[in-house]
Structure formats: C-alpha cells, structure tokens
Length: 385
Ligand SMILES: *[C@@H]1O[C@H](CO)[C@@H](O)[C@H](O)[C@H]1NC(C)=O
Ligand SMILES: *[C@@H]1O[C@H](CO)[C@@H](O)[C@H](O)[C@H]1NC(C)=O
Ligand SMILES: *[C@@H]1O[C@H](CO)[C@@H](O)[C@H](O)[C@H]1NC(C)=O
Ligand SMILES: *[C@@H]1O[C@H](CO)[C@@H](O)[C@H](O)[C@H]1NC(C)=O
Ligand SMILES: *[C@@H]1O[C@H](CO)[C@@H](O)[C@H](O)[C@H]1NC(C)=O
Ligand SMILES: *[C@@H]1O[C@H](CO)[C@@H](O)[C@H](O)[C@H]1NC(C)=O
Ligand SMILES: *[C@@H]1O[C@H](CO)[C@@H](O)[C@H](O)[C@H]1NC(C)=O
Ligand SMILES: *[C@@H]1O[C@H](CO)[C@@H](O)[C@H](O)[C@H]1NC(C)=O
Image (cartoon, rainbow, N blue to C red; front, side, top):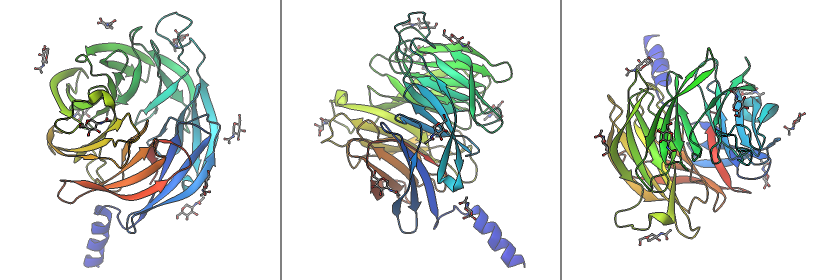
C-alpha cells in the first residue's frame, strides 16, 4: 500500500506529460475560432474543431481562471462565450459594444474607440474583465461579469492621456492594480482598481525612453516585477514593483530581442512577453518567453527565453535568441503551456500557422516540435488543458 500511495503522489507531482492538451486560437478576421489538440508524446498538432461564433475577427481571446468562459475582442465589441463539451463548443452569452467616440478620455467625438483589441481578466472573484480598445485617447474598460462569468456592464474607465493608445494590460496577482502598456503614448501606467466599489484611479504615469513604445507587459506572479515588451525598440524592459503600493520603478535595464549587430530595429516590431506556467509553485515561473515580428514576411522574427531567479523573480540570464520559422506577420504571439514549462505555442499570421516549441533540457535552446497550417492568420492562443 505504501508503495502504491507513493506512486500516486509521484504521479500527481509530475508534470502531466505523455498526454494530449487543447487550446483555442483566434484569428484577425472571420468568425471561426479553432480548437487544436497537442499530443506531447507524438509531438503532433491536430485541428479538432472549427467553432462558429458571432465575432467579426477575434484579434485577442482570453479564458477566465475557471476556464469556463472565453472572452473575445471582436470588431466593435467585447464578447463572452461559455466553454462547453471539453472545449468543443463556445456558446455566445453577451457582449459590451463599443460605439464610436464613447469610452474616450476626451470629449472629442471623432475619436474611434471601437477597436476591441486586448483583454485582461482578474484571477479571483468577482473576475472583472478589462477590455482595452486600441485607439488614440481611448480608455480601458473594467467590465463586470455575472456569477457564471458572462460579461455584463462597464463599471469603470481606466483613463490615460489624449495622446495615449494602450495595446496591452496585465492585472496584479492580488487583482488590486492594473498595468497598461501605452504604445502610442510611449509610457507605462499604473491604475488601482477596487472591485468592491468599482472605482479605478490613475496612480502612475511613467514615460518610457524615446523610441520604445510599450506594447504588452506581464506582472510576475510574486508581485515583484513587471516585464514590458518595447515594440519599437524590440526589447524587454525591467520594472521593479512595490508589492504594497503597486508602484513601479523603471530599472533602466533592457534586453534586446534582436541579434547583436542588427541595426535595423525599424524592420521589426516586438509583440509579446509571457511567463512559463509552473505546475507546482505558481509564484515561481522558471522562464520568461518573448518574441518579435519581422515587418517583412520573407524575413523571420525572433524568439527569446530568459531564466528567472527562483527566489526573487529577477531575470538571471537571457538564455537564447533564435529566429522563428517565419515572420510572425501581425502575430508571433507566444503562449506558454500549462502542463510543462518547456513548451510554448506561437502563432504566425504572415504564413497562417501555429507551432509548438520545446525548450531544450539544458535551457540553452529551443526548437519547433510541431506545426499546423491554418486557413487564416491566427492572432493568439489560449490553453484550455
Ligand atoms: C476547418 O475548416 C477548414 C477550412 O476552413 C478545413 O480545412 C478543416 O478541415 C476544418 N477542420 C475541422 C476539424 O473541421
Ligand atoms: C449569435 O448570437 C445570437 C444571440 O444574439 C445567438 O442566438 C447565436 O447562437 C449566436 N451565434 C453563434 C454562432 O454564436
Ligand atoms: C469530457 O471529457 C471527459 C473525460 O474524457 C468525458 O468523460 C466527458 O464525456 C466529456 N464531456 C463531453 C461533453 O464531451
Ligand atoms: C466611461 O467614459 C464614458 C465616456 O466618457 C462615459 O460615457 C461613461 O459613463 C464612463 N463609464 C463609467 C462607468 O464611468
Ligand atoms: C500624461 O499624463 C500624465 C499623468 O496625468 C502627465 O504627467 C503627463 O505629462 C502626460 N503626458 C502627455 C504627453 O500628455
Ligand atoms: C504581495 O502582496 C500580496 C497581497 O498583499 C501578498 O499576498 C503577497 O504575499 C505579497 N508577496 C510578497 C512576495 O511580498
Ligand atoms: C533610471 O533613469 C532615470 C533617468 O535617468 C533616473 O531618474 C532613475 O533614477 C533611474 N532608475 C534607477 C533605478 O536607477
Ligand atoms: C535586418 O538586418 C539583418 C542583418 O543585416 C538582416 O539579416 C535582416 O534580414 C534584416 N531584417 C529585415 C526585416 O530586413
């Protein structure tokens, strides 16, 4: 009995490898969201489902913490779908529509804030959804959800400058702060959000160095760091976070996402940064994964992985920088897998495919281990299992 119990414990502790896993991918155009299976024993990607939705393009998709709802940034609306049948169905539930001019930080009616571009989700009840329209002077929307997770109403605006254009956000581990990457305004913002009163306050505006253009960012699950991808500079910037006040300090440290000697950063546009997902201690991810796109479909993008200090979460080392299979198009969005920190998915909308990459055991390199051609340009991937 002792040995079989030990075997059960070992099986639970081990990463769920030799198994099949499932993700959704959204697309820059069309109403289809695709369900894909990855078999890590055979290293194969299989096209499982074409799911019809009411979306007109799904340029960003996000699952809630409970993996019961898929939120979709569609043309003119943030939509919610209930996930059913182990990921085989998406049932349309509700949406918040964006009307031209509304939601802008200024009263100028000509501002277009209908480009539903990015979604962040609070990781704990009441699971507030942050919908971010991308356009000059647009505010971010804090959107309430009902008990099942369907989106309801905008409860607060996260306001920026009239020259801002926020492309990505992330929520602090305690869900009390929202960080915004202001691509058009070249800045990083800190807002507080009180989910009880529904009040959002601007706490901090940090101008980024000229020519940076923060695009996306990721708050370390231990609350100590925010890593920001600078789109124009094609680099990763390090911001220290005060875990009490939520305020950031720019550490003036960047890591290039372009090989040494490349002087043509204007030919690239960096896009994504995400943490690997530990299967045990979720506050101590091993890796930070980032990618940049090439502006020419005939030239590859780049992908880089950094090791993180297990105690502090600081970057220990930029482990490698490698060409991606193709340019990335408008995507090259990396999505670390939930079953092993060694795997991440990557989308390519320039050549219409999704790939699985595996980081080598010694952490010094990575390679594409599975490739799936798709019917259109995928935007981002979210892992269901
Ligand atoms: C999904 O649709 C594409 C065409 O757009 C088709 O090639 C593919 O076989 C379909 N996949 C499934 C699983 O139905
Ligand atoms: C689109 O929305 C309507 C409700 O407005 C719903 O009845 C229908 O099932 C939805 N279609 C899809 C494909 O999700
Ligand atoms: C979901 O998967 C489980 C385990 O494989 C299976 O027992 C169940 O029937 C599936 N449910 C649906 C609705 O497909
Ligand atoms: C958000 O801002 C818009 C436009 O200024 C305004 O109409 C709306 O009432 C605001 N919403 C909330 C919840 O404050
Ligand atoms: C943007 O807003 C911040 C905070 O209100 C302010 O400090 C900064 O000067 C503004 N910058 C521009 C370019 O308007
Ligand atoms: C950061 O703050 C949160 C919320 O107050 C707390 O739960 C967590 O333990 C803190 N983490 C560290 C590393 O201090
Ligand atoms: C980063 O540079 C700015 C501007 O030179 C300076 O004010 C700030 O103190 C520096 N930050 C750190 C952590 O050294
Ligand atoms: C950027 O410059 C490098 C080095 O000269 C070259 O290999 C690469 O093709 C260039 N990239 C683009 C997108 O033009």
